[in-house]
Image (tube, rainbow, N blue to C red):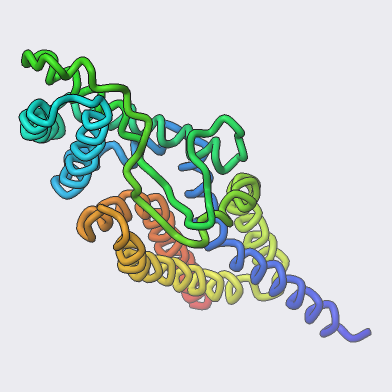
Length: 295
């Protein structure tokens, strides 16, 4: 066996380890973000809670809540004169409620309820209030918001507001034919999201450590990491338009969809930027260090 054989073997092993680690990097970034949103109730609420102050989102919620209350009032069998007089009052109170500080609290309750039901659905909980059909859909539960509007109507002296029943329905915020496929993927996301970032890092570090030419391996790895991070950011930018177009069949406007997408995508964007920046720093630092040693 020549001296070049072990050297070549180390290079091959290092390349395999680094390539496997680099492949896992984007998987780890996306699955880790998804796992956090699915398992961490506080993270889910913290991510979407600021949307309560966005005018586009408020407009969508106002329309959905007004329609829900109007439908509920119609089901009471009240005289048409009463329902006709109540509808503009409901619309006014919904608008005021959505613009008030109380809406932020009701919005958080809606997010908590939506998160609980989404997780229950994806984990195949038979008691879930949501189901994933062939049509596919995710809804924002608006029961707490309707209750807030009803309380405001009662406080303003509306005689019939107390008869508005609790509403167990939601606003369709996403619909996709492939959404039903998410249920079997749910458990995989929980597992992969937990270990893939750490395995990716371990494989990359091990690959660089095994490499016969560690500096070159580190520089190449850093450059590829930077490219991966930039590619993830570009994919998120493209995905914004795709997400907005997928909501054309719902009451969610393109502007509101963009706001929601940005909030959710931020969980991936910042790790992607960190990957790109970290890769660039690694490549530059090692290159500078190697040049200094050669002097």
